[in-house]
Image 1 (cartoon, rainbow, N blue to C red):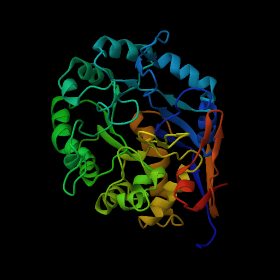
Image 2 (cartoon, helix red, strand yellow; image 1 turned 45 degrees about the vertical axis):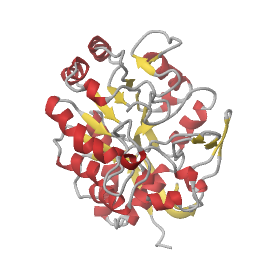
Image 3 (tube, rainbow, N blue to C red; image 1 turned 45 degrees about the horizontal axis):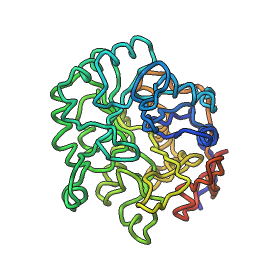
Length: 367
């Protein structure tokens, strides 16, 4: 065990997470508050999707205005920042973007590949948006595009192979076209998992950033497959060691400004279902500890001022800077000590956090 130490950091922002809907929402939000989280970008893939900006909910669609109000009522009013992106569908119009930007309700919009993850059946192919008036309106009004960067509709051999996969194909084929046609569009490449995505973001303009989850810094597909550890199953899935090494390389680079925390924490009360495995790792209550472990496994000495600065930049500073708000003035602490994350009991049922599902003792705890 390393010499005991304490890290003091600005409270951090989880710029990609899922709070779901219904009676368990307060427990999910509280788990984030308990781990020093100052704010969140809450994903809009609810049922129905958050695919309109304002007004009352309808049977086929919710609104940012209404869902954000539900989140605040469930405890998110304690956050310094709460961003709810607009779910992009075939019904999204440029007028929606302009009106949403003018109202202040719309700050980001989310692209889902059709059927690419949980509740993504409302998405449209990226090709439908390239050169569109919707993306032009986002460019002109400073709306951030959050991208789930995977090609859709692939066969198994293309979805995951030794030399290509759904994400690498997206970054090879579609992302260059997107940047060429919409050079002013601010883009977050969410939960990147491959060396292609990592290096694409690195060499793109400063309009392009990326979130990285703790599980993709820590694990590879071998960890998932060996024993079929379904608590590690998420989309995009964990990849190979050279992919993980590339993510580590760009995340810990001194002075980098493009990569930041977004856990993609996704709670499921039932993980293994009759029709397959629910996608999503739950890291509420333990994400900063897991990120610290990932940085240490990447060779960062968190006891050094340089190492602490690198970690602070990724966890607490880069995300707010990219989205255009101030970092938190409040602080939280991590202590170097073995700890565990218990099952989260909610009104919808128990949720198993990733470390418990992987039988992973945390080497850090929240002070």
